[in-house]
Image 1: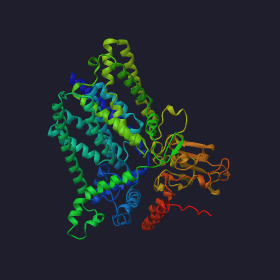
Image 2: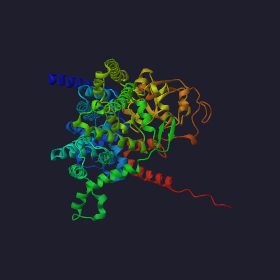
Image 3: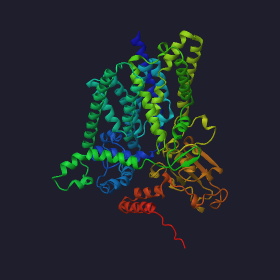
Image 4: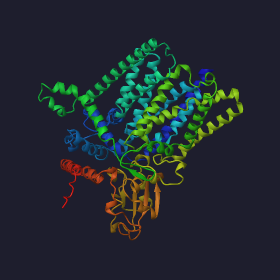
Length: 635
């Protein structure tokens, strides 16, 4: 009977995962390529075809390799004699060349629709696997109903649905980080060789997915320290025995970390086997030193990527209508409140209230987590504190996707709720029925929100916005990641527009998705724009550009508020006047760059032969920007 019951729950879980795949996949089929996917798809293809990691070193290669697998199997073509490849044999030129190469892989050398669709399939599979892993872990922590509760919230979270199919690193690092934390707890419960090996594989996969997986090491240390303050299940009470108990587990953990490092090394070694070693020429030139340089390339590439993340880890951000020169501590808490379904927030409040209430009673009778998984529970909530702390301290605040690991751990915090409700039945059956009904209603409301929001998950903001538009609250891929270009084309066709000015949030060749479009800057309208329809990314209205002036004119929301079509007046007022564009002194640039980086990248995408010249120009611009300004002499 128990087996049949467990099978039924597994079948329901499978149905929920199919629902997520349909919603996420269906939405993705309607979307254009997002900003980072341009570089990631081309880079992943080159990793497999050339065993060369020159492109996109700012992110580890695993997710990009997975995305490129179906492309290689289908014979996707890339021209490795093209200047975008040959010019990019050094680190910084490659940072420029990867965008040209990625755009040409998708739009010039192959069919853009099929390349994008097939590259997204493995990413959707990763998201489905993450859902199943979440279901299994929640089921172990809180029983069958806990598994379905946590899975229902996951598959209905708009942020996860939006990013699930995209070729980026956050879903992969979330999956492998969650598995690593669970396997870490397994080691501390049973420090066996088998657990160390599985832990090593999961940790290596996390480290190969995103550099921020290094935060896992801080979570390991925090967990170990927590055992000094409060013992976990199975921990001896005698001090000498406790030291021996802790040393054994640390020894097995360190073995797993060393094996993980070896796996990461081998992965980088294989996929960089054909990459030039000129970056290590200081070790010597010629055939004699080539083996040494080749052996040192993997750690060099990994550490160089980490260093780049640290150097570029501070960027301007925007939240609640205000811009900031770098990340602010309240960014992710505010974003979480806006981007979560209200049902999820209600379930978290219910679980928290239940937990606090039951702590006041007899703890032995209210223990909601089975004793055999108490260590796992400790590892998960300690990791939640650590990852959330890093998010709060981060100076790079641009997207809810960077909060994906705390988000999945928050969902797992719901696992004890069904068992706590069940135990309430013994003392207050009527109250238990009421709470159970409330939990069911909140869960169903999450699923209803997911279906109702289809297919525009990127700009989803709940009712806590109180009617304020998304562009006045959030930024970047929380609103628009350039995925809504097909909606602009549909609008142009509906209105019979032969041409439409487009202020996009990215630097892709829009001709693929919107043949009628030409790139436009909403801060610099001309007389030719008088009386015309224009399209502008919601991110450009108050953040990327300073174009709130547009919203006083007739406008139409596109793609759920990711884009806006605006009908300009027959005579656009002068800059700085009422109803007119901003003065040049009030201009803002895409990405917080010191110059119009979008036009810069589009120019080299359309004219790749200008890459060397463009690289020199970029160097000159940044050098001039960094020069200290001399003070005028005092008379």
